[in-house]
Length: 320
Ligand SMILES: NC(=O)c1ccc[n+]([C@@H]2O[C@H](COP(=O)([O-])OP(=O)(O)OC[C@H]3O[C@@H](n4cnc5c(N)ncnc54)[C@H](OP(=O)(O)O)[C@@H]3O)[C@@H](O)[C@H]2O)c1
Image 1 (cartoon, helix red, strand yellow):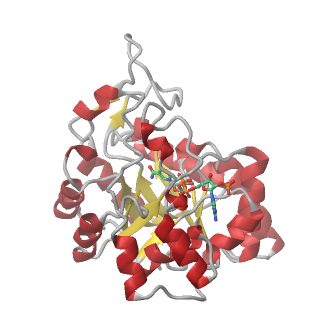
Image 2 (cartoon, rainbow, N blue to C red):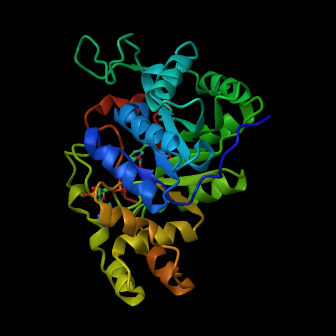
């Protein structure tokens, strides 16, 4: 018998950069408003709090387990095949769940496992301690977890087309369900979307609003001045449809058949981000948005670790 559950909703709640009571309140608000997908990760350090909210909902009867789609991600220190299960089981425990709906490899490059859950280990020179694991071996452990009915779907995050292809050709019996990547109006991922679609793999957009609240991610870059939500085309379309620029961005992605996981800790914006199914962008609107793409990646991951680009699995050294 397979695990029961819903398909992955087109809109989910992102939870990066929100912890403690704030994440509890956001998740509770989102579930009350009708969100049925919560995106978290071992890295975000908020699985305990999300687990508490879920437990309250399940035990009060306001939600059944199979009515909500929970995604978490394997952290990079645990990509070695002998470490995958430890990280997965810890996430499951923190979330107080028996199974996950979706589990992603957070990124294709590995970090050293120091044995004490250090998230960003350093080497003797103070540099981020990178290691290279065979991503196929990591994938095979995730496949085992699916066959043991501990995960419904498995997928990738921040993988480039060649890495996706490698998983597809070397997998044993479970293909990737999704590739979760940065995607928004200034970084539209047109080629990667087509590539994944051709292999029947969905694309999930992280930073679907251009991540206006991100801190210290690209701190040395003047890209921080780029506020996608301030774009004039998006503002014009917002006025035309009586929506906000954020809703235009999310609707554009959903109409491209891309799942979105906007993060908000504000009840009004949490509601706003789900309220995108009562209008439609025309072909002309969609073309106008396609034309503002400047292929600007905000999340390069190398600003605090420049040597990361030399890692054999660093995903962003090829066009897509
Ligand atoms: N796989 C990966 O490597 C990876 C990387 C990054 C993110 N993610 C996932 O993707 C999720 C989304 O990405 P993100 O959090 O970086 O960026 P995002 O969802 O594009 O943007 C979130 C920011 O936008 C603000 N915001 C939310 N709704 C808004 C609205 N309607 N109007 C104006 N501002 C709004 C939020 O502030 P308020 O909270 O104040 O509303 C927050 O500062 C994350 O939370 C995480 O779950 C995954």
